[in-house]
Amino acid sequence: TPAHEPIIIEAPAVVQVAQIVPIQNLYQSFHDKLTSRHFTVTRSSDDIVISLGAVKNFAAGSAELDEDAQKAIQSLGLLLAGVQSDISIEGHADAAPVSSGRYKDNWELAAARAASVLRELSRTPGLATSSLRAVSYGDHRPLVAPHDAKSRELNRRVEIRIRPL
Image (cartoon, rainbow, N blue to C red; front, side):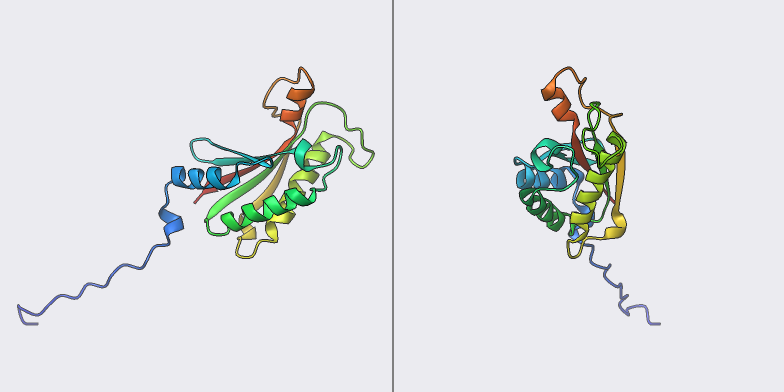
């Protein structure tokens, strides 16, 4: 080849913005759009945790989401559809015995609530359902010591833990 012939370098492939957005920006977006009566949004070092209080979103002893909670989870699903992530849906209960005859114990109730949230999220078009999993912790990971009704209420929740990939 002649010494003055140009060298052609191909441009790199375009990277999707969702893959390079820092976790802080993603957290801020979720926080701004989701903080409501249904969700609280917090951040750990590698995860964004969206907590859905059981008292406000499920009937006592039930794993059925109320209609408003279903709509809120659908909105969350639309936000998650654009984010490549690993999503763990974690059911938590308080230490009080389950009063409903439908569930044997708090493990089952927490698992059923996590599964209800997973099912609702999985209906979102464009959300990679292979990134979803449901986990039950029963009453073994309380947020606070269960001294009174308010603290037991805080421990009854479903946490949606998002780890961007």
